[in-house]
Image (cartoon, rainbow, N blue to C red):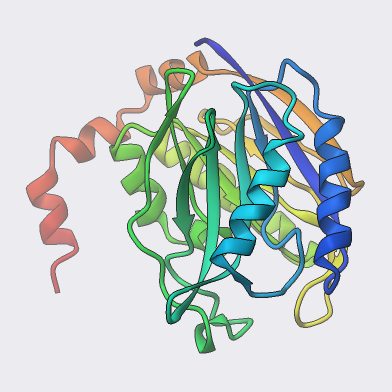
Amino acid sequence: MKNITISIIQFLRTKNDPEYNLDAMRQYLREVKKESDIILMPEGWAGTKIFDMLSYIRILEKLVGELPHENCLLVAGAHYVSDGDRVLSRGAFVLPGFEVKYFEKQFPSNAIKERQFVSRGGPLPVIEHSGVRMGGVVCVDLFYPEIVRGLALRGVKLVFNPANIPGSRMSLWQKLGVARACENTVFVAMANNTGTAYPDGRAVTGESFIAFPGGDTIYSCGPKPGVFKFTVDLEEIDRARQRWRYLEDIIGERKRVERWYSV
C-alpha cells in the first residue's frame, strides 16, 4: 500500500464519567470517513478510572460497533487496566474480526506518580495491517529512543503514541516525535486529549500530530476537539532511507550495539 489514511480523534473528555466519555467517543467514531484505514485515539480518553479486564473488553466491543468499515484498524488509546494482581497502562490494537493485540506502557510516569500503582508492561507487539507493520508506545515511552528503535528494527513503519500531555509540553512532544521519526525513518502519529487537565492541573490543549520520516513535515491538529483525517505516502520512508542509512547501520553492527549497552 502506498498511501494510508489515519484519522486522529482529539478528545474532549471529563475525568470521572466513563459512560459520558464512551458515548462521546462513539459519536466521534460515527464521524470518521469511510476512506480511513486507521483510527488513533488518545490515552485516558475514558477518564482516570481503573477498569477491570472484562469492562475494558466491553468498551472495545462498543467502539468497534461504530467503526466506518470492517477493515478499519482501531488504535484504542490506553487506560489503567487491572490484570490479575497488577495495574497496567494498556492500549489495544483492534484488528478486523475483533482480533485484539495489547500494548502497554513500559515505563510508568514518575512525574505523575504512576509508579506507585502501575506496573511495567510486557513485550510490545508488532502488528500488520494492510501489508504494513505497525507498533504502539504509550505516552511517556516516546522519551525512550530504545523503545521506538526496537520497533523499527522489527520492521515497523508506523508508530502510534496515544498520550495525555499538557499544552506547556506539546512543543517538546512534537520535537520528540520528529526525532523518533527521523532517527528511525518511520512515521510517528500522536493523539492527545484536549479541553481537560493534567493530573497537576495544567491545561491539556490538543496539538496531536503526525511526524514524517524526513523530518521536514509535521501535521498538527491544533487545539480543537474533533476527527482529523490525514493521508500519508509510505514511499516517504523509502525516500528517506535512500539518504539516511541509520537502521541499516545498526542492523549491521549488532555486536557493537551490545557493547554500547553493556554495563
